[in-house]
Structures are given as structure tokens and as C-alpha cells.
Image (cartoon, rainbow, N blue to C red; front, side, top):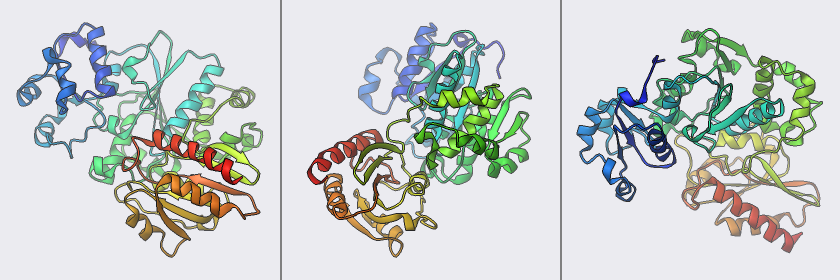
Length: 429
């Protein structure tokens, strides 16, 4: 950590003017920092900041002290790959700016391939119920530099691998690494780079900090000789009180891992079991994450549009029976669909999207499936197929792929699915 860091003593290039880049710009203005420039490959965005635009990118990158890179930009795939790689040591993120000012706050940083947003939201809900002064931001929605931070506040941050990959000053009091499976390999280049980015949340922690990590990642943690206190996730302890939990959403299989971490963290905050259980009663899950939004007669519909890889989808597939599974979109790089021990839960699958060949190959000889491509036609077909089903069944929209071939984002995709379910349910049920 840089001691006595003063923002005004340094120069910056804000590289990328998306949501995060704009938040950095506003932050520097608020702090009355004048020595900064902006760059965005989309000329329209850059035109809005003519007075601060870096007209000669190479010279600006060479002259500034820090390059604040937007998290969506990968050096490996950027057309500026060569020059960005040359000045890689200068690259930081919005998270770094937050920590560089060395503010007096406690922070909980959560990362992992799956479950980050839900875990952050549960932690925030728990601490609020326990009267902690806390705020929530980062990859979950609100950029950290947009948050209003006061004294004695607990800051809960969802950190993506994109943010952590270039971070150099992130130092959480509590660091939670939930899990690691193949994801974003096109952005990181290989699995090792991806793993390294996730483990960065521990690199600057001191002896009085806590590291919460899954059992299968402990060896990697120990090999790196981090200073923080390693806290094992005690699943047996949580299991004892899980049966007393009065919240069906949190008791569902996809949330068991998230809750193990939250319960372990609660013990570090000295929150007793009674308070923990009472606090969890009122928690409501995030949209598009195993969202059970429709129940009528024998039919349940689940919107799991946030599942953009198979590892994200398998939790939902393992938690229901007689599933009519809708999947498809842009498959993640090197992703594989392994249905071992869960194929018996799936009655039929429906492949949507433009890249149907990949999914056909993955499902061939494993489960019954059809190619339907269009989501509206698919939902109509599903309702036709379940008309004569007597047992309880689940319509599961867990695409195991990104949405960009047909939708703006996973939120738009999920909302469209929910709308279609309600429309066709009136017709068929």
C-alpha cells in the first residue's frame, strides 16, 4: 500500500469511457484533480470530453503515471495490445484508486466464478439487519467510486476477475474466494492467468486480515505464502443450522455454497445463530439467479438467465427434477457440458441461439433435445410438451451461455423469458 498518497500529485489516463470509466472521471473531478486525460476507441464517447482527450495515445501512455483501464477491456484482444503491454506496470483499476487514498473503512471483497453477486447481497442484508453501517458496490452494479463512504463504514465489494487482473493496491480486511471454474479464458488468455487474478485479493492482506477460501483451493493459497489468517469454510457447522433456516430460496441447492461463506463470515463478525437465522428470513434473491417466479398447478418456472456457463447452470440442474431445460447462446471459451449425475433430472432440452451446433455436440447421446433457436417459439413448444405431464415439472431457463447473439444482456434475456412464460401460461394452463 502506498502511504500518504495524494491524487493531485499524479497524472492519469482514463482508458475506456463505459460505466466504470465515467465514474473514475467524475471522481477525479470531485477530488479536483486536473492532470488527467481520457481515451475511448468509440469516437462519439471521446468527443464529449474534447478538452481532456488524449490525441496522441502513445505519448500520453508514456507520460502519465497511471493508466486506469476499464474492466471490460482485455489487453490480449485490444487493438492497442502492443502499447498497453509495454506500459502494463502503470495499469490500475477503479478499485485501486479507492484503496490508494487509504481511507478508514473496513472492506469485504468477494470474488469467484459463480455466486459473487448473491453472496454480496446476502452479506449486505445480514449486516444491515445487524445495524452495521454498510454499502455495496463494484461489479454488482454501482461503481465503487460512486459510493458515499463515511467513517466506520463496512464496504462490501464484488470484484470481477477483470478488475482484479490489473489491480495493484486492493487490500480487503475480509477476502472471500468462492470458487474457480473455467470462465473468461478468452479475456485472460489461459486458466492460470484467470486463477492468478482471483488470488490477487489476498496478496496485500496483513496478518490481521481474513481469507475465506474453499477447501479445494487451500493448497494454492498456502503455496503463495500469504500473510492473512486462513479461515476454512466449515460446512458441517452451517449444515447444523440450515434446517432451521426459514427461507426456501436460501435453502435451495444453488445457494448452499454461498450460505456457507456468509455463515463463516458471520462468525467472524460475532453474529450469533439466532440473529443470523432471524436476519435471513426476509432476504429475497436477486433477479435472474435461480429466480423462481412462477408456480401454477404442477408447473414451476425458474429464470436463471445469469448462468452464462455450464458450471453456473449445473447448480440449477441439480436442484430440480423433471426439468424442461432451455439453453443456448454464445458458449464460453473451452466450456464443456458434463451431465454426469444430473442427466436423470432432465426430461428434455431446447437449444436456442445462433450457435446451435456446439450445443448439439455437447448434448448428443446424453439427453433428449430439440433445436428451437427462437425463445418465443421455444417457450410455446415447452408448454405444448408439458400439457399432458401429470407429475411436477420445472421449466428451467439456464442458458449456460452468454446472451449477446440475441439479447443486449442477461437481464434483457431473463425479462423476456419471464414475460413469455406469463403469456403462454394463460394459453396452456
